[in-house]
Amino acid sequence: MRPATLAETYERILAGADCDVALAEFLDTFYLTATADGRLDRLRGEPRLTGGARIDALAGAVAEYLARQYELPSIPPSAFEPVRYLEHAWHASSIDSPGMREYLTYSSPAEFASRNIFTEERPLRRARSGLNSS
Image 1: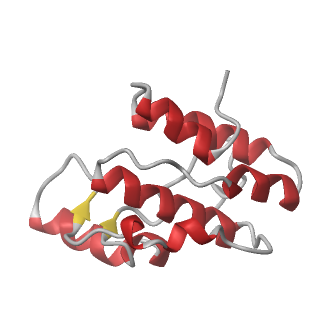
Image 2: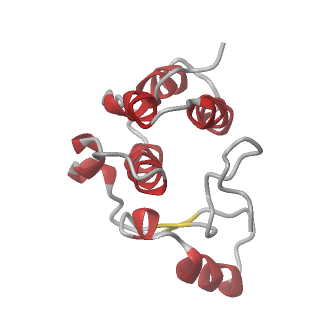
């Protein structure tokens, strides 16, 4: 069963689930939600802290990014807590080269870059997102 909320996703991560898998399952659920109110409900609960700075900051970026992409009426306040920001840059790629770091730095959406998370331009892209079309 897929996590119904971002908070539930973090409960699964805390219970030992792989972060990438848990987040992908949540995104599938989020993207299949038909209404703005339903999508906002999926983001409302505050994800518990994992103790991993990157994963904890990622929760803020995901919540803000999805809320803005889907023009939801609000962004969960927990997305803006100081613990949802990194002190040092995280270039989220398995390729560690100056060129890749530069690409990620310039392509990252503001919701990620403001938290010192540097990723591709559409970091939460999934087959069902509806945001994949060019």
